Picture (cartoon, one colour):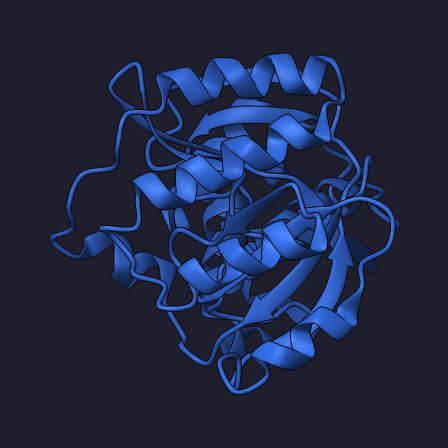
Length: 280
């Protein structure tokens, strides 16, 4: 008895800040994935390498009245999602566990149940939804679905810092900046599939909230973005990755003149995806 689910990462957040006095974010899934297998085992041990996922499984089965089953299930995770960089790797793992358990126990999806159990583990990315959603990632008390996910490319600059989402959000941090205007701008952009405006929203969001997590490379990326014709800079507000949103092809040779300034960063391309295919 086993179930396997593939679930995508996100790349940071398009926007993050305060709307209606709530700390919110809005993300898009990308083409990096976790593969989660939940299976029966008399000697479960792999799940203890994935404590967040293991705790999620235990909490959910207990809530369903299957507490005695907890010891009989194990979890294996294979992932190409960078950890601790702002790619929602833990959220993707929790989603994989949830959909696996739904299949194994023939349960129906319940959005409130899903949200509650994810947030009980850690602040949760909005890729738990099947469409683009402005989401209160700490308490789950506000969500606004704004349309289908959009497709665009991201030139990634991944740094070396590892940031734990739970610990980061426990710090005494400056408050998030108000982004009511960016929320409305993003809603219209998604309605019109306007990637340039989405890029603009992302750039303003990361700049407004830089007081919470500084990116020494940000001024340089803003310059590179202009030179290569990118639409904006998107970032992880609690991670170590920035990216340039673009469509079409880029002249990567432009990066050569900045090679000394971007040493230590892993540079590669990823792209957002329109649909979350569970792969079950």
